[in-house]
Length: 280
Image (tube, rainbow, N blue to C red; front, side, top):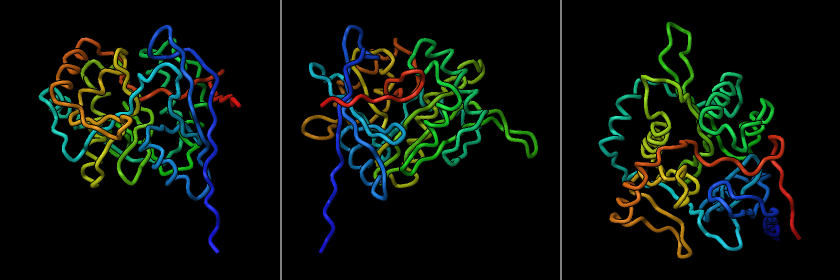
């Protein structure tokens, strides 16, 4: 006699101001990731538009808006543009390491520097060291932190200039949150380089996709995601590739909006800690 299949329970958050489009509200549907099947559940949900935050998988579930669109890069077919080639060349001297999901003081200091420059009034601005540790370490799935450092001297590691919390799935890499030093004048494109490095890592590992989270047309802070080709988006009919003409138009529009380079911010916070309200 086989054990019965246990389906996850889903809940819906209360409406909150939308962080991407002014004047709109957002709400999310979410479920808990736990147990031996957490990896499998997280991967299955990611394929239908969910994102992970600590031990929770969530996706937008807004009543009157479908602007948030899940996007992923086809890593095996990716060909960098001229500007992306320059970014790779400018930063390929960095020492890149895959680290276990364990928060460090050095990572937290870099995050604080990044948030102060890029998101001074954002939902994560009040995140303390304990909150950061929760974000990194509370993972029930296969994850690591990829660190990007300048070359060190002797046995001493070099300066940490970037990092990304990344989930490893059977069909690709899911970039949960990335941050970097925004004040290095002689090193440009660090945010883009982190994405390019993930695409390269996925392709080298035989993983077909790099999940970039949500893209919102009309939100300047999200437009950088359309610069990676080929790019697929999740529709009601499944994953579909952007048409070349459309993506070229979006890329041209995105050139003028060169804002944030972090992958999706985590769900709404209250005092820096995640909070979900269940609606019956």
